Image (cartoon, rainbow, N blue to C red; front, side, top):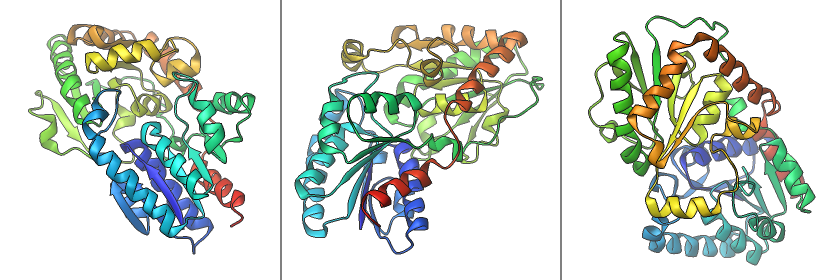
Length: 364
């Protein structure tokens, strides 16, 4: 038995692929999981849906403390009674930090697939991980250097999105009409803050470009009603294969996994992020990096614009997106720079390499 724990929609995706890779490499292995709908479908035993609860940030999780305490108690009992051969935490450090401690106390070797962003904030977490983790299975090459220098066992397995995202389209010529992608995030709090900005920006762009079309990419853990009344000429899209995403010309995008997805597809974007003001105040005090978009972080400079908190207005978002729509030279240049990020992330097969590393460490 192996226990896999994920806590948000992107972690649910990567954890489910890891589960399938473990079962492919060792057909007899049984997997128990905490995650979301994808982990539920992949695992032999599903303990709790944590991914759909939207527990994120610094202040917001305080509202979920009773639920999280209860889940931690259930996992403590699970580890005591079932004695899994390994525990694999996937991202989501706030809760998985407690899972690592439970695993350590139960004598179960623990692994971490998709590292918490210790390079962005709170580097002291590395000391905790060094004590509690058998091996870090990291998805960015610079993370391998960071952990190795800190004396933490680590293996770079490549980025799991390379297994999911198709090769970008080759035709750089903009179609007619132009298509604006809207990716407001996956959590209810993100939709509440971002949708007015995105819808407002689309309306501004539409007044100058009457033929403009919009595609709003919905999250699997939100129903259609969560997106409210769509602006005219905006279509709600639900997909898992990126076929429609790869055809958009520019995106308005919440900070998070979607920014890297767009970069791997070569899609110019405007990254927008708003949070509660208490959370923002804490984040400003903790964040040590200059950028929030992974494409900018990988490049070490700004490739795509970022509009954070007070700067995230419909007018600014429309102006930034409009520059890409009106300047083919800028679009082609940005696209080429974004695709450079794809080449830096290794080859497909991250979930398989991570699964093989876990099984090798526990002798299975």
